[in-house]
Length: 166
Image (tube, rainbow, N blue to C red; front, side, top):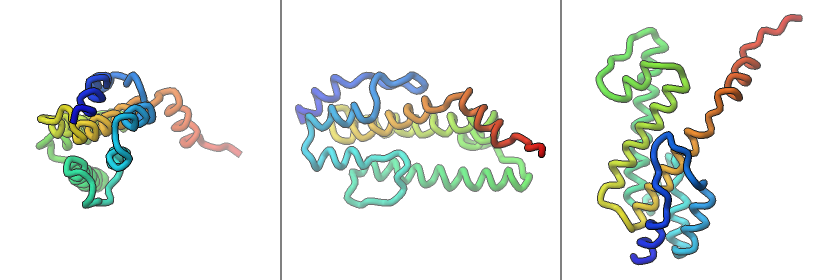
């Protein structure tokens, strides 16, 4: 337990929409100095996009996976409803996120929902493996937020939408 205390104490504070000081690889490298091979494997398997249930994974990661599966299911239902021309009912945060703004705003809104869920999961965990798993997942959320490049996205959009005249 002490080893997690020192590792957790040296980690930079993460805040949504604030660029992380270090990346995922640096975090795993530092964690590897303090953890057994088995613990590090559990930590590194905590992938934000992993939807395949692993009953040997720590409970906190399985809880996140359940949240992610439900988030994706509900997102698909709401997008299908919108595509069919039905107005989405604005009854909760997911409905609001998907009914307002451009696609980038919606994606950032979905990432914020994930972040908030992880913040709730983190409660009561300070120096344990569960804290480090949540930290790693939050680091992945921030990495995703900061991969969006408006200029690059505009170039890709324009090239896809460009009308070829022959």
